Amino acid sequence: MFKKIYSPVQKVSFAPFNHLSVKRDDLIDPYISGNKWRKLKYILAKAKAGNKTHLVTFGGAYSNHLVATAAAAARSGLKSTAFVRGEAVKNEMLLLCSLFGMELIFTDRESYRDRHKLFESRFADNAEVCFVDEGGASVEATLGCAEIIGELTETYDHIFCAAGTGTTAAGLLKGLQEQQLPTKLHIVPVLKGGAFIGDEIARYTTTDKQLELHLDYHFGGYAKTTPELIHFIKTFTAQTGLLLDPVYTAKMFYAICDLEKRGQLHRDERILAIHTGGLMGLFGMRDKF
Ligand SMILES: *Cc1c(COP(=O)(O)O)cnc(C)c1O
Image (spheres, rainbow, N blue to C red):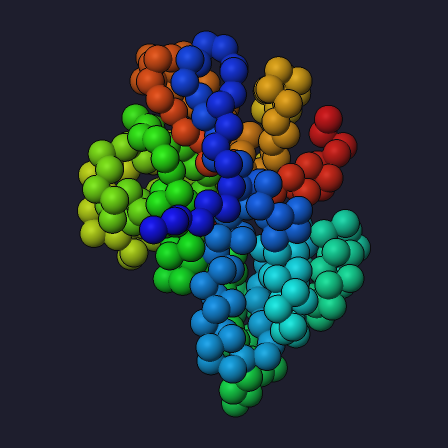
């Protein structure tokens, strides 16, 4: 049996770590970035199997998920629509969405809260339309993310991943459980109050005994940053040649370094960081650099 491997694992030399590797999901595709590709894989398959012709989804104006969905839909011959949270704006991400043919419906924050109601208001009784939740959160998404673990050819003491909704984290944990690997899974929520991620993961998995949530690396919350985090990105990228996005992957790598300093990780342990992509997030924060 050959197993299909969609992204390489790269060894990275970054002091003081002796065995730091990175799963380069950021290389899978420039627009269907990283974990969004994993998450959409089975969502698209299910949509196609159900004869859907149109994906409808939700996100903020800087959402990687929107660009990924727009690109994936265009390549699969599907139409796409997004309810975009907040007032009408123009930016690089929404430009890409439009170029991929996505219809953008700007939605006030109040109405945005009830996504099913929004969907019904516009697409009720249309059997060809497929509801894709914010960030692609779904069982299908966890199946795609579990495959990250199936692709690994080495074993690790620790795997690290950043979390927004926690769907990718749930998939990784599911993958570890399926393969019966004892690797510890460390999840770094990028939102303030990320403890809900534990409940989200529990919805899809049977036990959380290998799971550790690190709640103190949100740097003020989603899409928030600090001069310290920006400095970290500059240092890390200059030393490794790997780009990080300030919203997700920088917070994860910062956590890895900080946990080592606190003695909770050892430099000789085998650590795998999942690079979930999202590099376009850099552009939304160019003023911070
Ligand atoms: C969306 C995203 C995540 C978060 O994934 P969840 O499954 O929502 O937890 C992590 N990293 C990047 C780069 C993302 O774009």
